[in-house]
Image 1 (cartoon, rainbow, N blue to C red):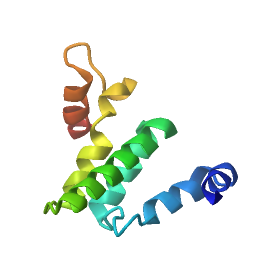
Image 2: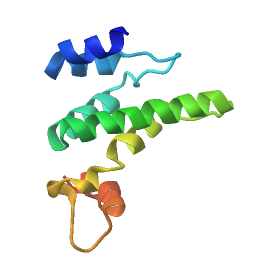
Image 3: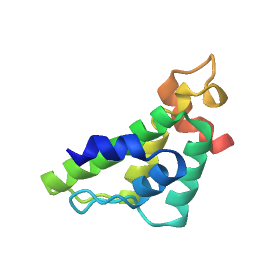
Image 4: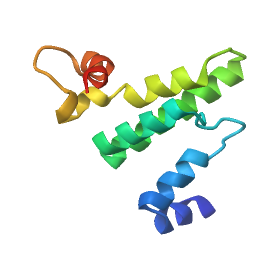
Length: 110
């Protein structure tokens, strides 16, 4: 019941800070320089809707991997989850490639 209230009352930087420190069943965003830089780049490039979608992709992927007993690199999973839709943004899209390819390569040439 408190979940909708949190969504209603928190927005902007406060909500984003909570997202960065949110732990769900032992899964949290990696606390590394690379993860912080990825977060900043994606936050500055994507809409809040796409940013939060990508964050949820990380949490769901990490939770699914943990549930299946898989060994994975959380930082690499975070990078993939956060960049997977980057090709949908005007700055990182092209007329030559599908959005998935643009999302995988464009951030490299920032």
